Image (cartoon, rainbow, N blue to C red; front, top):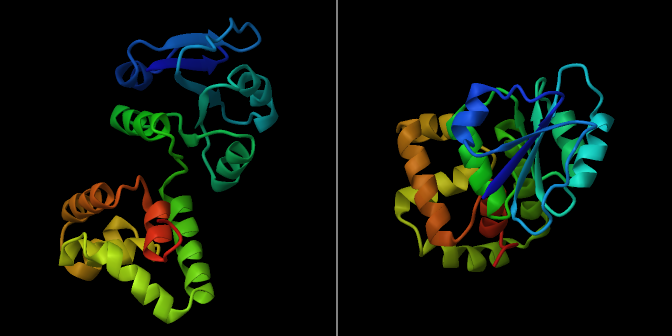
Length: 209
């Protein structure tokens, strides 16, 4: 998959080059045409103190591609702004190479990357709202379908995560390691055919087939 990185200059961070060794570096206000026929991800950097509006033109050039915003000062307000303008993800500019690769994988497969804290808030809110709206007997009937696909421990982990718990919180509640939580969560995602925590919450609450 092709990667384009847009910044005020072509001084790419080492972490970017490690995660995306073949990325094309583009400079703002002097953008060559981004290939419309070649699938890929456009990474737009938002430097500290810059207004989000400065990225509007960059994103317009990438209208047919997935866009991920690299923020020097990441916060939830910026994430929501990015998503409202059509971005597929938002992360810290200095994210580790393995995180950038994971983001590329998620976004490349049609998912959204919005950061752990905001995702947990959305998952928790979604779970509460759906729980209030859906009848208990309906939840029980729909719940049996996904429960049958998972092991007992995977079900425990899935329910806690769908309620908005972080991996650390799940580990503390179940007296297991965070690494074990991640392994159970990955297995649950694969068995249920879902990509992220929000989809897990929707599936458990009967709003995702």
